Length: 318
Image (tube, rainbow, N blue to C red; front, side, top):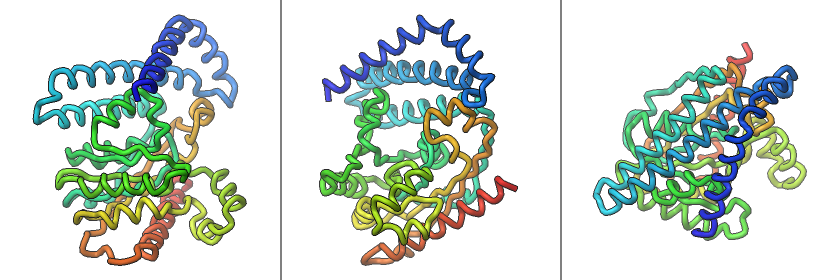
């Protein structure tokens, strides 16, 4: 862990120095490149990159101060959570203004009630903050995350994510038993004032990944046909959550509008520009979650996820 953090923070320092020194050149290049359709939002993206770097350094400074000042204080986790909310909100607000995003939230009645296990669709780098801001922060409560371990390459996510009660899991399946145990422990130890989030698809949806799964894992072909706009559920983690559930409701989050922003190429080619993003929540009380094998129940809710995605996409197209 220490070696990783030394490497990632050193890399951040080098990148910061380079983008500072090369700022005049990068600005001119981005403006010239923006006349080409493939780079039309290069200037917007450059602004966002600079802001991201600033948020990283500010977040690291705030984490360091809170750890030095409050690590033995009963409110330590609350201070960390405030930094988490600030970091996500700062990035999202600037991204929303630069790319002129329009956000709509539906099913707001699902935000009322006790803490929950939150299962969200995943299509973009940008949608990772949607559950935190529109569920966790909106309810002023902690939201534990199940995250892919690659995100520890970002210093703020690494340090903040490990100080707060989250888990980073290996998605390769090389040690799935250990990953499932981590998820199970994360849920079973969650307090009455904490919700837990997982992206049950395990990775961002793209049409290419959907097609590659059809070729590489023919046993999933029926599910892929059933959910053309989603990836199949990774049942191991979700089943572990339900099995370890201390009595929390289930909340699902469907959303559309970020399908064209899955990677950096989409970012600079205009995939985020003027997007209308719609979030749809729905809640299932703990009493209505069936006991035993959850597969049929989860598949039924994933059918609902696909139905919501289809109807919302049709609305955007109209």
